[in-house]
Amino acid sequence: MKIFAHRGVSGHYPENTLLAIQAAIDCGAYGIEIDVFAVAGELIVIHDRQLKRTTKASGNIEDYTLAQLQQLDAGKGQRIPTLWQVLQLTNNNCVLNIELKGHDTVDLLLQLILRAQQELGTDLAKLLISSFHHPLLLQVKQQQPALAIGALTACIPLDYCEFASKLGAVSVHCDRAFIDEKMVQDAHQRGLAIYVYTVNDQREALRLKALGIDGIFCNYPAEATGWF
Ligand code: G3P
Ligand code: MG
Image 1 (cartoon, rainbow, N blue to C red):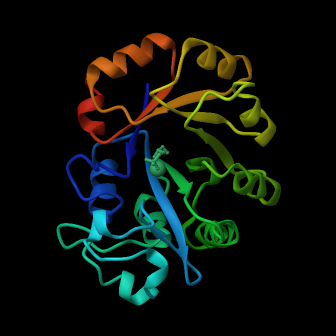
Image 2: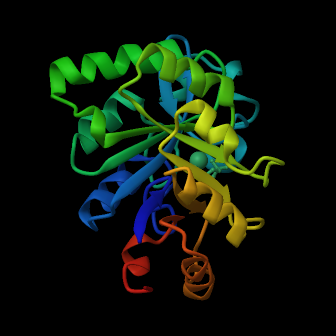
C-alpha cells in the first residue's frame, strides 16, 4: 500500500508547511501531497483560497501581495512555502504529488519543474501532478508528456475511469466516500493505479484495502505504515 502524506504530516504539524513536509520525508512516506495556487508569478503551497483557517488572516489569497502572504503565520511560526522551496526540500527523496488548485498554474509549474531539473537534478519520475480541474491536467500532459498525471475525482463518473484514460493519467485519486469495487476494477483494467483520500483511521484503511486500492492519502503517514 502506497502512503502519501496528505499536505505533509498534517495530523501533527501545520498543513502544507516545510515542517510538515520535512516530517513526511523523515518518516519515509512513499509520497507527499501538497496543494498549490498561483500568486504574482509564483506558486505557493496552501490548500484554501480563503486564508482564515490556516493563517487566521482575513480575505482571500488574491487580496494580498506575495510578500504579505509570506509574512503570515501558517502555524507554529511556519510560513506559507513556495513550490520551489518544497522542490528543494523533497528533491527526489520521495514522490511529490503537486495538486493544482487554481487557474494560471500550468505555465508556472512547467517553468519551475524545468528549473528544478536543471538546478536540482529533479527526476520527473518523482513528480505526480493532480487536479480536480481536468483541462489543466490535459495542458500539463500536452506540454510535458513525460510528467505523470493523477486524475482527481470526488464522484464516480458515468463512465468510471474513462476520464483518466483520456488524460493519459497513471492514477485516479478518488474520494473515500464513494469509491466502490467497480471503480477499482475499472481503474485496474485500464492500467491505472487508484489512490484514495483522505484516510485517517485503520478500520477505513482496511475496508479500502479489501476493495483492492493501491494507496491512500493520510494525515498520519507514520502511523499508517502499521495499519496494513
Ligand atoms: O489530492 C488528494 C486530496 O488532497 C484532494 O482533496 O481538498 O484535500 O485537496 P483536498
Ligand atoms: Mg489536496
